[in-house]
Length: 115
Length: 114
Image (cartoon, rainbow over all chains, first blue to last red; front, side):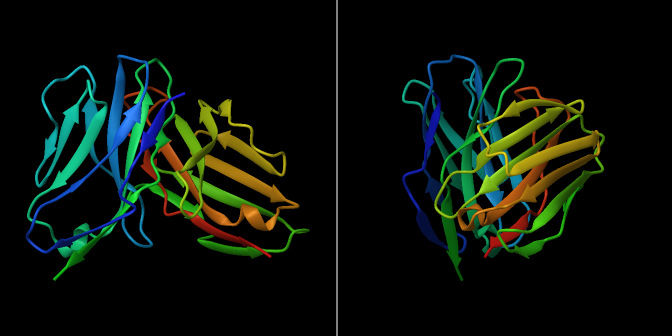
């Protein structure tokens, strides 16, 4: 069965600095999708960034980028120029690339941003 | 905010009560999901509905009963719950139950079972 591991329960970053959140996963599939979701305190979970496993190029969305290492089954999230609004729980998630598929989440990393 | 709403936002119930959680999506999506989010545990998928048909039921106790009357609404009926069922229950929707479709989440219902 597929699993997703986030080894950092909590992380802290200074405003305007860069932080990297780690995620590893285990799968025997070659076709799959990886996601990072953000859940601010008392607010809805939103998608931050998505990576298709067949794409070698790392996905980027403004200040958010990933380091996708398929052989190592690693999918880290880098947040540049951190802002106070980035403080949230961040969840890494995996989904098989078949016609149907369910999201498998990690336990999450709580990110604090210090002013 | 996304187009997925959930009511109530907070619910406290006794173990003998019967209550229902409601989810509504205004995005024209065809797939809807119930997740359970407990402290220090990964989100657990409970149920998936695609085109109003239940397509996934992840060994959820029968005290949780989902209902999907149409593609815009999803309910989770609760009865004789246990204290360990206290959690944040999240609803989500996606265009279809396809792997690359983004899921949009509601704000959740914070459930406390006394």
